[in-house]
Length: 112
Image (cartoon, rainbow, N blue to C red; front, side, top):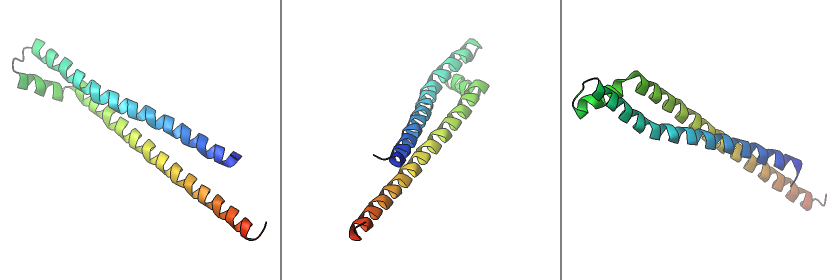
C-alpha cells in the first residue's frame, strides 16, 4: 500500500471512530430519556400528582426533560453529520482508487 492510500484509510478510520462515538451518545440519550421520564413521574407523584397521565404530563413538560430532548436532538445531528462525512470520504477514496487503476492501465497500454 502506498502513502496516499494509507492517508485515506487513516482518515476513514478516524471518521469511523467519531461516528461510533456520536452513535453511542445518541443511543445512550434515547435510553436515558426513558429513565428520566420515570424519575420525573416519581417527582410529580411526590408533589401530589395522583394519576399516571398527570405524572406523565408533568414529566414531559419538565425543563429537565426538555433539556434532555435538546441534547438528543444535537446527538442525532452529530451522528448524521459523521455518517455522511464518512460516506463522502469513502466515495472520494473509491474515486482515487479508480483513478489509480486507470493510470496503471494507461501505463501498461503505452509500455511506461
